[in-house]
Image 1 (cartoon, rainbow, N blue to C red):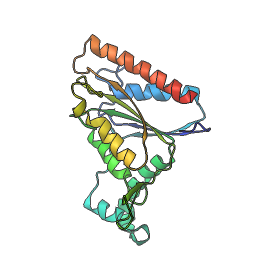
Image 2 (tube, rainbow, N blue to C red; image 1 turned 30 degrees about the vertical axis):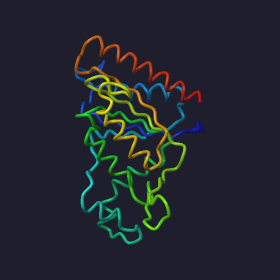
Image 3 (cartoon, helix red, strand yellow; image 1 turned 135 degrees about the horizontal axis):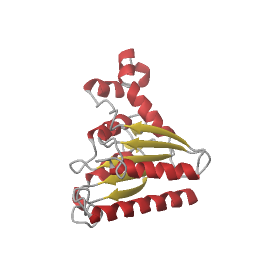
Amino acid sequence: MTLSSPLRLLHIDSSARTGVSGRDRYGSHTRRLSQRFMTLWKEQRPLDSVTYRDVGVSAPTPVTEAWIAAAFTPQERRDDSQKAVLRESDDLTSELIAADLIVIGAPMYNFGVPAPLKAWIDNIVRVGLTFGFDRTRQGEPYWPMLPPGKTLIILTARGDYGYDDGGRLAGSNLVEAGLRVPLAYIGLTECETVAIEYDEFSDDRLSASISRAEAAVDSLVKRLVGS
């Protein structure tokens, strides 16, 4: 990511919990981290613009048979009904293409991302827009189409602990893989992650994990802005 001025940020929250931990009872840890990141960022770079999507509150429409048929119909051949089916996806994809920095609050639900966030992913992985496909192409028939230079920030929270590389549950961490893999597929390969763990324990280990995660967010913003 090149820090030209101004940058365009896309901020996505996906927690079903609308409150913020530390402020609201049963509030979201990922909303806490994403708000902290965005507040610190805007303090350092007030001219940068932010597009906000709360898919946890307003979920994108899941992919349907009609959506698939429309997406794989060449743009010049789509009828009005197909254009209407893709309108929401077009808006979501345009936001992603325009963004320089993508900040996603992604809690772990049953080892993976929340369903609304998966619906967002399915809407922005678009043939002809964010990835190309040509079965006659020599070598790899698929290629990414996102403009280069974007950075992805994943801010996540987990009920258990040990999900990082080498941890006791590393193989069960489908949140980061569920974001990194499809987004790298379309060209978003630069990624940073900060996580809170021990949520289900609600003891000193959770408090310490929150403190470490907040310090990591502060350090990440400082490093990215300084770069």
